[in-house]
Length: 268
Image 1 (tube, rainbow, N blue to C red):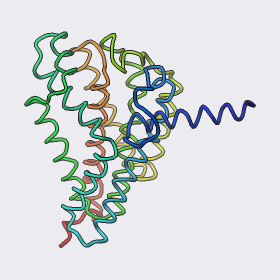
Image 2 (image 1 turned 30 degrees about the vertical axis):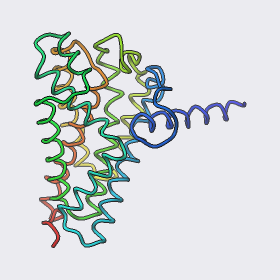
Image 3 (image 1 turned 180 degrees about the vertical axis):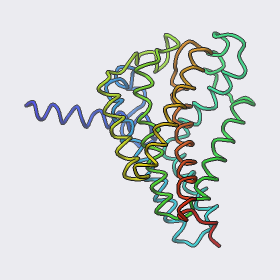
C-alpha cells in the first residue's frame, strides 16, 4: 500500500473507531477497542458527534413536519440521540454522580462508579440533564435552529474530550480510560478545531465565543472535581463532561436566540 493509501486507511479507521465508541452503529465489536485505539482516534470523536447531532436534528424535523408541538419534537429528538448512543454518556454522568456523591474515599468512589446500578445521585443527575436539554429544545422550537443547536452541542461536547484526556491522567489502572494515557496534543488540537468550526457554522462567532468560554470553565470544574475526588479521569468522567458541555451549549443557544426572536413558544 502506498503512502497515500496508508494515510487514507488510518483516517477511515480512526473515524470508524470513534463512531463505534460513541454510537450503536454496527461497525464492529466494541470489545475490539482498547485504550491505544481511543488515543489514536480521539481527534475523530467530534465526527461521531456530528452523526449523533444530525440524527437528533432529523428526528426533530420529521416530528415538526407532522405538526407535533415543540414539546414532543424535543422529546423525539432526545430519544433519537439516546437510541443512537445507547445512553453511553448518560451512563457516565450517572456513574460519576453516584461515585462522587456517594463514596467516602477514593477506592469506594471508584467502586461505585464501576457498579452498573444507578443510585439516587445518578438518577437525579440524569433527570436534570434530560430535563434541561428537553426544555432547551422545546424553547428553541424552530427546526432549523434546533438542528443548529444539536449539531453544535454534540460536536463541540465531544471535541473537548481529547484535550481533557491530554491534561488529566487516568484515575485507575483498569478500564478503557486507563489505557488511554494522554492523547497527543495534535489530536486534541484537531478535535478542538473541528468543534470550533462547527460552533461558528451553527451558532455564529458570538455564540462560539460564549460556548468556548463556558465550556472551558466547565472543563476546569470537572478537572478539579475528578482530581479531588478520585485523582484523575475515567471513561465515566468523560461521559459526564460530554453531558455537561452539551447541556451548556444548548442553554447558550436558547439565551442567544431569545434576544433575537429566533426562539418561539411551543407549536400548537
